[in-house]
Image (cartoon, rainbow over all chains, first blue to last red; front, top):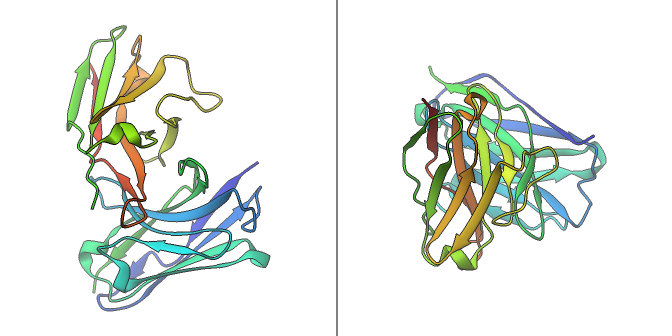
Length: 120
Length: 109
């Protein structure tokens, strides 16, 4: 079955760089019909899409955060990595990775999420 | 950038019908997806491509999309439907990014 699992630090300091890894199973990152996005949710707030990587390695980024984000993948390891620079307390959130279908752009499978707190 | 507007809250009695709207400029031309999120859990896709249901989602969940408004309809509401609901589209007009609505808290009275 399809699963996604996020991993990374639970606590980062302001100005540090966050690196999160999404490990997928049940599908291949080389499958042309799907890709993987990162989405976050601050406590008590709405979902916010961050970035997406397609099977052909094409990338899309949130306009408001583009300068701080980098998304990449290692198909052989079934992993998608997100880095976010210059972390701030407002970046405290649960970070999810999710699979997205190419045709309709729906998120059909989600990871459980990982809570990242930004604090000194 | 493209904006999706949802009411912050909707309340409905058990057994009644809940309708949650998602407003956006000419949203009827886009494919709209809906997610249910219960406290402490990841979102779950409940309606995709305006009105289709993934396997395992009850027929009570349906959707429509026309003009500037998409609607998620939940018939015969149950206590277990109490959750936050989010609409989502892919904006390919300029920014090429996913957009979520602000979410609607469904309360079952």
